Image (cartoon, rainbow, N blue to C red; front, side, top):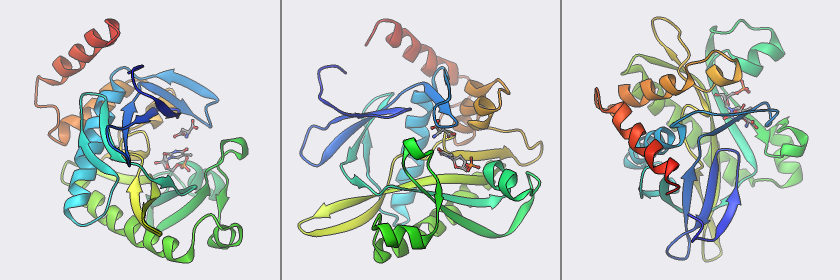
Length: 259
Ligand code: TMP
Ligand code: ASP
């Protein structure tokens, strides 16, 4: 990995220069953070699972016509992506009350929302990613009105698709976070889906037991986070029965050998 030029290191991923202009390699780490990195840890095998899960979801979204940065998976922890200029807005879509929505408004976690809510957060670690309104985004020029229209349309399409995808494997999609980027073609920027979609940025509850199958297990010290991510991958058909541990064992072996 050190052979390549590192472009950016985030909390859960590293971006390296890609093989061709306009491409990057996205490397998925096992590192986990919460509460703006005040809590830190690792979830063994998370990078491998998120790489596969995000590949699967972005591929399906591409097939229904949602443009994404994903090109192809390269190996267990890396995927080739299109280089975009990240729009500094985190888009949170909520179907069921949980997390900060419940805390802020006193709505019991698990309450089905009568309509889907889309929220925007300004991506700025120093400010702790504050929630902002369309007015702030327009006023400070973080995204154009046209980009915000495209983002809202895509967020709704992604939500409808993912709710069905997860319902089919008996998982309730409570909420999730999306990021978008500008893909420059000459002087024109197209808005496409970027970053990742994985249990790191989604709340996924088993439909019968409400068991949490996402990063809340880490945020809330519930334990069993690696098993929860594996369960999501398994239900999506990405870790055939019995093979799950083999894939992750192989990765552990390679990590130890420093490859
Ligand atoms: P919240 O309830 O903490 O605001 O989170 C809403 C959703 O957004 C939840 O699925 C987790 C995800 N999320 C991220 O992916 N990154 C973040 O930095 C935060 C705060 C939330
Ligand atoms: N983005 C958060 C952090 O900065 C992680 C989270 O709560 O999802 O640590």
